[in-house]
Image 1: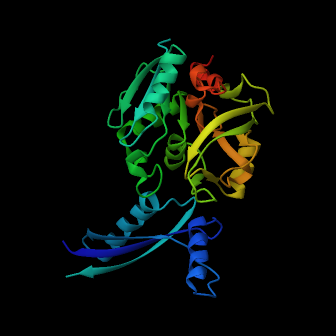
Image 2 (image 1 turned 45 degrees about the vertical axis):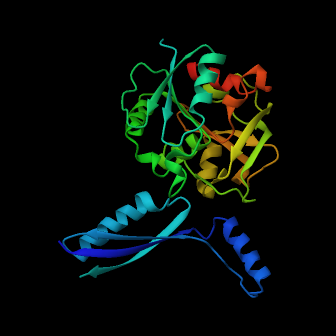
Image 3 (image 1 turned 90 degrees about the horizontal axis):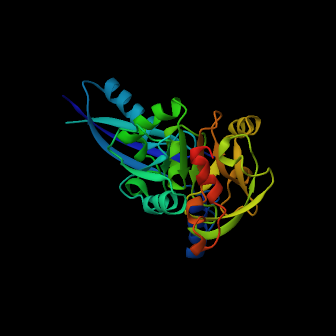
Length: 85
Length: 220
């Protein structure tokens, strides 16, 4: 069965305060990198999954993202996927 | 009545023994540890999800614990009207599980907070807090890094309409929306809170304000 490589990006929803992002932004300022108006920290999850075709692989990754990798109450998610030889 | 309270033990739970001591040593009830892989909840009057770092809090607090076999049984236990108390990490697990709305996120000040805080009892609808009066001030210890309660405005209005906001911080330590420290479900048999009632029950340690909350596990 073909394998697919997916990269799921999980980010806090825009309405949710990201104190870690704010702390990193102020550290960036102290580093001397000025002009950052927004810095939000999320997660990237890389996985390889077996599926008969890309459509099925997408379905699996969607379920995984919605039910486990992200908490839709506070987080948004999206992913990119490609088949691997 | 068996007087037995179940105490769920996940890998990484660290308040399970404190809770069992509070239940047995301080209240004279019986405690039964429930390993996360067990599914038998028969003979229990209530179940406590204790504080700690279930499964290392990997991914998100409570995110992995949500899939533990013991929690499948817990859903049925709750549907049958069983009482469930989630303390700290246990509260986080209850929100991940969907038994309580909202989510617990990183404290707004980023620091782990270990303190004793004043709280206001804001509902006496459920048996958990019926021994208190509305507006009554109590003091309980908190110890968390991710205790900032978050929910949508819609959910907040629903919580208010259903009188499900049980405890509010007097001096919000973590940025929780509407100063929320603890909520119940609509039915009233599930209660989740960030403060630790089991740490305010032994006279040797000081405060006793957690006693009535834990006593209400048996509907007393």
